[in-house]
Structures are given as C-alpha cells and as structure tokens.
Length: 202
Image (cartoon, rainbow, N blue to C red; front, side, top):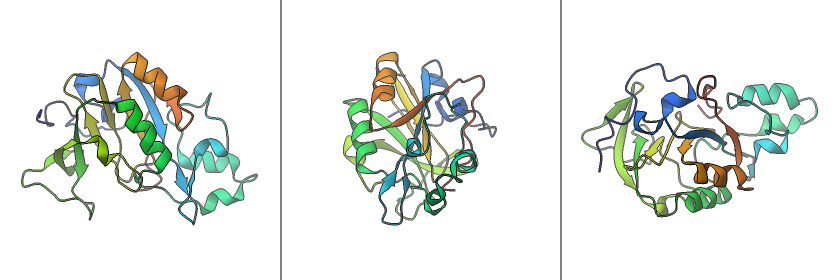
C-alpha cells in the first residue's frame, strides 16, 4: 500500500475543493457529491428535494441553501447532517462506481468507532489512520473515510470531518457515470474557483 503522506496534501490551506484531492490525482475531473441530510426518523433527504442543483456552483453550502428555500420549506430547519454516515442509496452508488478498484483510505482518529493506528498520518492538523478500504465497507450505516485514493491515479475523494459532501476526482467515464446516477446529487467542480465549504455536520 502506498504511504498516504506522499499523495495527500500536507499544507494547511485546504480551502479550495482541489486541495482535498491528492496531488497525484489533481489532473482528473472533479465533482462534488452532496450527501443526504436526515429527518428525525433518520430517513435520508436529498439536497435536490428543495431546489435543482443543475446550475449551482460546487461551492454551495448548506447555510446558503437554507437561506434560499426556508420560506417555502420551513421543515428544512429540522434536518440534521448525516456526518459522513452512508445511507443505502449512496452506498450502493459508490459501490457500483468504484467497481473492482483497490483503494487506500485515511480515517480520522477522533471518531469513537475508529481504531487508531500506532503511526497516525497528519493532514490539515488532524491525525488519520491509513488502511485498505474494502468494498464491503461501503454500506448503509457505515461512516466514510475522509480521504480515499487508488495507486493507479484514476480515482480519489476527499472531504472535511463529519462531512455533508465529498470532492471526487475520477476519469471521464466514471465522472459521467456518477453525474448520471439518479441516486446521487452531484455538481461539477471548477478547480480554479470552487471551494469546499465548512460541513453542516461539523
């Protein structure tokens, strides 16, 4: 397994969306996947329930969405973040898109359900544990690792702690597949412009 310290960014200006992707994968196409929010019954609610994302920038934050739609959808105030825990539809979509690609991952050591390694890796002032990511880990009820990448330079994602979305880097065929997947809310990232805003779940 590749040492994650090399492909992942070590500087602290992780503001632009592209800064959450390893240097080795930054020539790939980028998109943002918006993870569903949760009702009180823990049922997932997609961002697109409230407005079309087709012409929105990838920098759209949850706060901006609430400000724009709350008058017509007051129930939006009762939603909570999934904080990176997968629902069934998103898990299946990611599982299908990844296919047989072998992936490495970094998972934050601060989660109570994560067993920290003896040699943590620091990214943006937080400590993470390096591990192989089996496809079986992408299932409903499981928390996503913050950073994922393959050794071949064809697929990666990165995000903040307790994420409400992912920045994904991938080749054109997979990019098209993810954009067309009806189970996902996606927006194309313009790397020279788009940021990854603070997570609603953090």
